[in-house]
Figure 1: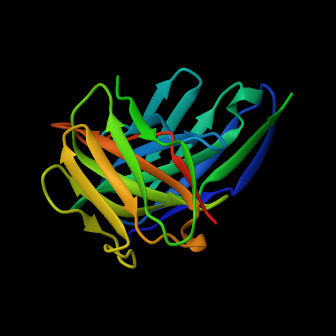
Figure 2: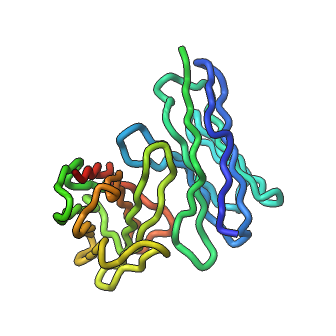
Length: 112
Length: 116
């Protein structure tokens, strides 16, 4: 019930392409869904987050799509750049917990 | 805003010694701070949640006597790894949530601990 499943485990995209990472959750009490970007040897940085009252949120090249009925949310990176190469984690929280439940991570590599 | 710092960024210590890691929220007050541990190519594992002025809440399987957490002020939390062993070698990351904030957690840059 507390798991967040993330796929794919790794992703290779050509520069300019679209990177798509998917996450699924089970706990319907979750009401906050952030995405974090982490570079090697650094802490995660909050990229973008969404709440269930909207189905999509866009910030620059990053878009979260949220499907409440399917209990799924995804991160789309438009015009992917080599500088986007990092590990991306989805997470969820809500209900009776303020803890973030993290997905397993997706290692993105963008080749020129 | 929402900057979190950690000190030190890396530390090497001998087996049996203790190491203290500091986590500071630089431009906001944090009523709640979280401590995570991350192994190479793995996700973040929550170790404990600390609220200012009260005892930390540890996750199942985390030894509270080994990983001492103190959250003495709204801008500082510390993690002390006592009697460190090589298996404690890991990347330790803290995060902080704003006082009066909703769910956003802001992460520090992490501390690489190596126990020899």
